[in-house]
Image (cartoon, protein in one colour):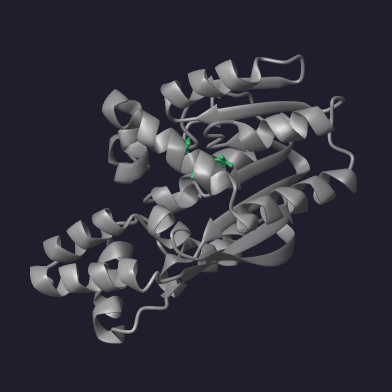
Length: 266
Ligand SMILES: C[S@@+](CC[C@H](N)C(=O)[O-])C[C@H]1O[C@@H](n2cnc3c(N)ncnc32)[C@H](O)[C@@H]1O
């Protein structure tokens, strides 16, 4: 099981008020990234083409995606679940608890729902923060109706590229960064994960998040990246020079996301 107290720092901090505002600013900023919008258009297009009565989102965060969907599809009922009670409160304040929209606290590894309830389950940028994504998938399949649609979207941090002129230090920086993420290659492993759980009819979509500076700094968190690199043994002055060049040369980055959509076993 993935211990909620060990969920990767950026999200465990979301329950600590001194970091909460920064966390919400981060999530709101990410919402504006074209790659993020692309996933949302994809989900909407998918819902358009299928008969769906109810949808669960695991890791619903600020609730922006679910709110957009609830407004677009008033006949479908949407439930958002998040490990952070503070984010659940914020999502409810921002979007209200509409007749077809509900947010509640809980862990993806122990869903507070009866079995075979949902027609579609979305989980976006959550499994990367968990040691054992298979535990969340197994819970998803428990609460999914037979043939329900499982929609996953995760990055492959091991394929992150950063256009920094110092390639050697960049490699070390990215390795240190990846080692702080619980499941950094989960995006690339989605198909294996789904197939092992018996999910079938899997479709794939690839989305590239292009991050021109300063989005590269905002999403990667340059200060945190530097801290991780120094903690992993990189020379402090090398890291500092690397970070200065990153800012001065306005370095951009690109992060691949993998989307896999499949059907729950019968
Ligand atoms: C990157 S955010 C994604 C937010 C959302 N998908 C969106 O579009 O805004 C990841 C979310 O997953 C939540 N989370 C992390 N681990 C979780 C777990 N084990 N169970 C439920 N939620 C979790 C975090 O609190 C955070 O809100």
